[in-house]
Image 1 (cartoon, helix red, strand yellow):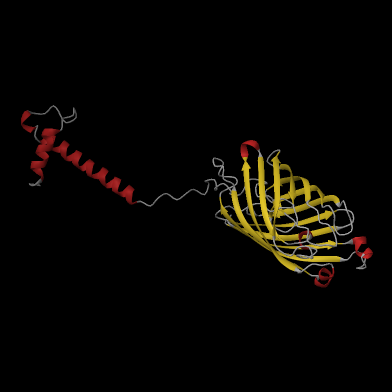
Image 2 (cartoon, rainbow, N blue to C red):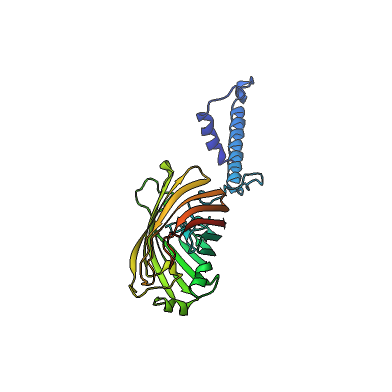
Length: 336
């Protein structure tokens, strides 16, 4: 107590007295009143400091179970494309630089599809699945069954003769973001490959094809202009596939890789519906029949991010002994 008295005395001199401290008591006892007031203030200050320290040491308040959950993440509808006939994310005929599935850069997404192409003299069933990893890598598998219908009988192969092709795909995003980087001119860029194997090696050799398997390599650039609701894509493919590989690879006219151009344009009518068109050039390797470039015009509808339906009018040109192979294309895709 002796050590505190000088400090208390100084404190009394520096702090003005409150009316409560100036009680109407005899002059000889005024020293005790300021001393009591100062002691009270010091004790109060100590208690406040202890309370502040306790508050700092207290554990952080746990979030309430009533707090709203974080907003679900995922891509904008239709900006990840649909699934093309060879299994990659993109349009119906050509791959885009986007990575398939609904996953963003911290997620894994995927999709499965079934496509039917009917052009009168021929029909194609294509089905498969893909996985998108962290919006960076895409792995895909697909199978195509090509029904020759009456043409198979005319060629001596039998009515409804089917040629099957299996495809394994890989796509890697190189740079850019087709959706998020709206303030930059640079498109999203991706490189990909599609390894194809045909199950009719003897037939393919008879018509002049050099191989029953081959690998396409492509580079795609995709850009979405949100203000104009417009998506544009360009793909350069290095290939020697005949009719997408259904008639083998290489031929008596040419057996080396050649660059081919592919392009897509899609206009978003609203967040659920897109319309557009595609073009794809192809090499003309076989002497047995001319091979034409192909194009389509499509409508894609996505009622939600898990389901999409695409319908298109497609022109495949000449296929073996039949010209003007035009018809309809329908594709159903489910994704997560």
